[in-house]
Length: 121
Image 1 (spheres, rainbow, N blue to C red):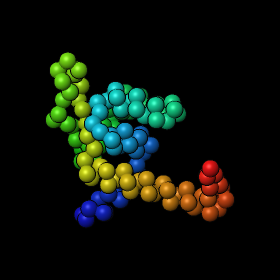
Image 2 (tube, helix red, strand yellow):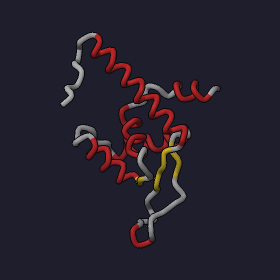
Image 3 (cartoon, rainbow, N blue to C red):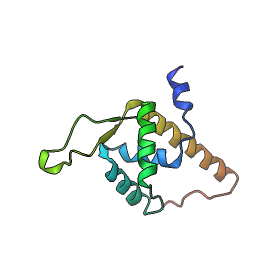
């Protein structure tokens, strides 16, 4: 399967998967940090349960979109039970394709006057 076809085969992502990939877009994180990042970034509108998070982390890892990181924080700042995850290049491609897909859907909604263009200040 070509890389573009592989990327497209995952679309649309579930909201949970997309938020997890977004949380990892700027660096490695462990599960609890991902939960906190998603809640903070969405101002509490999206709250992932532990079951949803860890089930999706396993799926994303199996699909090659994320990988467990081999790097660890300094010993005094780490808990050895934590697993740290990073976004793979393929995961970044899928997240970007999903963002573009959503952007196109918003463009179509604006064209149909369902929503208005954001005001510029």
